[in-house]
Length: 494
Image 1 (tube, rainbow, N blue to C red):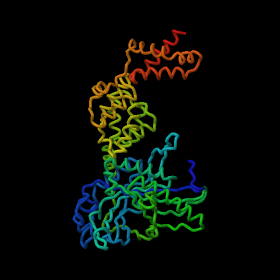
Image 2 (image 1 turned 90 degrees about the vertical axis):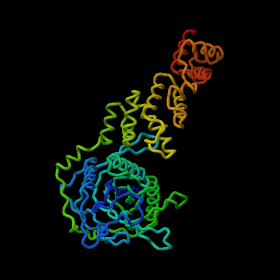
Image 3 (image 1 turned 45 degrees about the vertical axis):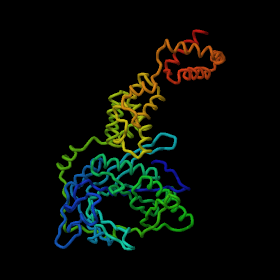
Image 4 (image 1 turned 180 degrees about the vertical axis):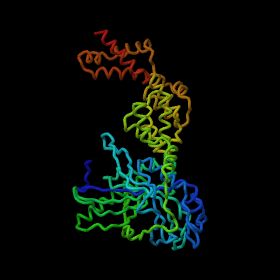
């Protein structure tokens, strides 16, 4: 069992429930559009509103997307599952109940693997077990702005297909929870079952948080609802954990509750605030929906979906390890999205330097993309160009420092031809031995003290001589050639 990091003597226990909007063109039980941004109440049909005489019809595409997810996480696809009515009252729930799945979900079990940064040490691999993933419909949306103190209701989202993915309480920190959510987000986008747009509500996170002393039973959990940012997960967990510990240390009990997170409170660090007491399953009075027959998924349907699956991140990462010799962490980073996988493989095949390609992708390119809030598909430096730049580092045409200067020029659009930029920027390394020998002779003549110190056994003196040579060539000398010639000259004059 893994060792958990304690916070103020308490162990943090976290489980996630993620609502993933499925990428179907129509809703889960009607033909209404799921397109985002339509005028309020223009995409809600009589079926979505449960008007008398209407009957829901299950969207086959939603089921296939659930099957895809189940196969991707190694879960059991239930040959028979049941839709139930989850009864509760809320203004934006037009039926007075939500069609969901309870006792027999379509996806059962499975696991998700991911890496979590570990301070200055190597990243650590984690495995989170999944409890279930079930199909359900979304509710509408309450509108509070521009209604002169009243609340408006937009039912466009009512009936939108969701796959709710529930994890076991296997996470022990906000960093683990955020890494799990990122990995899950990347997977559903990779599979094409969700567009992943968190700003539009396509991927929402509910985080269940409790604390306990080591070895004690699980504490009472509070559920932070509808987090739509990985950064907010970190902030919400941090605040909620400390709040719960403060309550326990002051002798107060934690009450099960549904909690909202306000990211703007506390100077931007955020705070949680209880919205209502948390319901248990019995409060929803689940019962099988009489309008929907059991969902039967034959094995040949599952196998057909399996044949249509793309290469998944984990198998691709293992292939990158065996084919290109990447470390496990690098391979995982190269498969964080399909774009990363394609970019890496294209560049690695072109320049035959896979480790350098991975380093550039994890380093300079990722930093630039993150700072400018761009996706990899919008990178000004494409895979072929990066490969050309790395090839020039490998063959000694340009130094690492010079390569970064060329990269900067490529990024801002100063050109697209690597060789032309190297020439025009005067960054081509001097590798000609005859030219370098004269420069090194001058360096040795000008630095007799360093020469004497090197002969006396001081290795730092050699580095000083190399530095003088690089200074004399304005950094353009090939360091490997300089080292080789300098050692030869110093040996010959002994």
